[in-house]
Length: 430
Image (cartoon, rainbow, N blue to C red; front, side, top):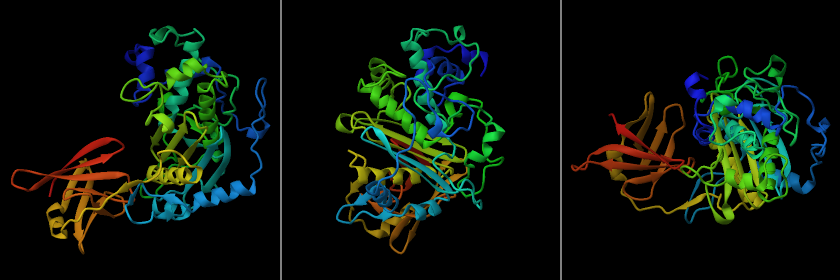
């Protein structure tokens, strides 16, 4: 963190928390707030107690919950379903193999509480140490809303003016007392050696381990949180409870509402706000080197989930898991989107064939094979592309849409790939 960055206003820092430009100042703010226990000790979750809160024990799993877990494990869903065709339900173990993802950790929130937590796979490829609910993962950008909540608590307490120069408050920090039970979480970078055996190792898209097992992130509040889905689920539940006026252990109802009010680009102060009405929810994804994760929580229904993986290809896997959870638990507006197939002459597919540059050294190769249009990005599996029109296509296995663009002579010059609400233009290079 340099001097120029330190002089940014707190308002800018809060908004930047959603965009990826936040600095380590939020670690200091979070610690001052006294809102969370983010320490480096490896104590048992169930043994943690503190004044003013209940013991954070994990309830015994009921047979009905076990059955729900099995349905989720065997009911992962793709992002799109073709009208008139049944949705394809996939097994978690198969999809982990497909995405070169050795380990995944899942926590499900229902009726305002954590209903179940499960770890799957192993901490590292070719290893034998199983992923458990206590296994640590890098939260990546989900570090930001946690840090933002700490900053907002300071504002709420009158210790910080939202437009005040950060330099006036930045001195030093130390771990605070626990309030909501995030007892396994830490912003320490690098991760202390005594906790290495508790952490999942990061993996690249090809399944190889990240050099050194994981990257150390000096920008702690932006990317440095080590945590578990269970801890993040507790954080999400606390935000839900504050929003409903049922808790003020971290934020008041007024401050929670401010946090979850759209500011710039549809983002709140730390969270994305992807929808309104009955489906209103707050969410954030994370992408560090070798790790991908997702947090989703509904504002008013007491539902949500956190999924953490130790693979660069874990985002799509996490999305498939979340859609499976959504189907089982009746989430509003989270199921696969229905697509209608257009009747397109396969002869035109030859004109789309070629190599399209999405980014330096990242090419999308389009081919026509036996009357089918296929797409394959660098280092990723080949997928069939289905037509919505003569120029618009989609795969069922990935949440992307592709539009081919022609010049005045009818020659394809580039394509536009839409993913996550963003458009990427890829020039046809050959």
